[in-house]
Length: 127
Image 1 (cartoon, one colour):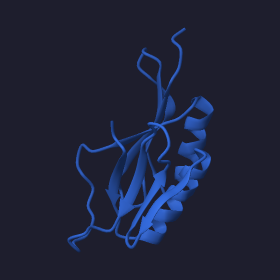
Image 2 (tube, rainbow, N blue to C red; image 1 turned 45 degrees about the vertical axis):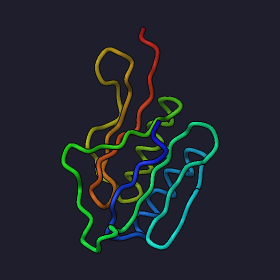
Image 3 (tube, rainbow, N blue to C red; image 1 turned 60 degrees about the vertical axis):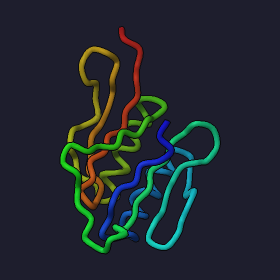
């Protein structure tokens, strides 16, 4: 249903480096780049993407309270890899990688260099 999610940035080159590293781990690259807007993902299939932009109205980008983007990983190893990539590229911890609850939800939470909150997750079989 969702094609892509756009997050605001005040430093496009810094945001681009951050998301380039995460996209590379996921096997995708930039799918659109126009002026102050960059999107990562693929137009093939039903996969969704993520984008960053400097706000069109010229005002500073700000973080939405209660807003979070969840990135679907293929397995627990990729959850950890993406979380580690985020930390190595200017991200900040919002909750370490690990299981959440008893329903097979496995995730790590972080903020990008602009303060946007994300998580990377996968579903694992319940034991």
